[in-house]
Amino acid sequence: MEKNRLRVIMPVIGVVFLIIIDQATKYLAQNALKGKESYVIIPGVFELQYLENRGSAFGMLQGQRVFFIAAAAVMLFLIPYLYRKIPSSKHFFYLRVIAVMYLSGALGNAVDRIVNGYVIDFFYFSLIDFPIFNMADIYVSVATSCLILLILFYYKDEDFEQIHIFKK
Image (cartoon, rainbow, N blue to C red; front, side, top):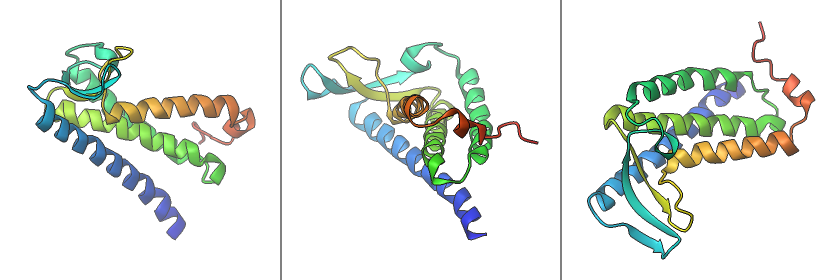
């Protein structure tokens, strides 16, 4: 019983913790950067720059607030459903962490869209003129990169046969 309780509580704690970090950094960025010049960390490479993003990744789909909130609502149900389908063994620990990161990223940006009508972005790599992003974006990007690497180099076909997504 205790092990099952931890299996539910730990990912919830992880999601809450990551959302708190995301929201705290956005709050700090808003208070320190809004209406001000960029704060250069490494000249010509990296800076902090305030941006109110009303779109998605890289500013696509501008003004589609309802769509993004609906997508986050779907993630709120889909990711925990998939999480429950992942076997409890240590071998699948990484997939569970990835699920926590995806949900944290989706909900972190959803909070902004619901509360502000836009997402606060502030990390900017000027060296490559990469679009401005935030912690929630980092969670999703890192989770995606790790998932790709795990699929290519760690998990085998037989591992995925253990994940019964549509099991009755």
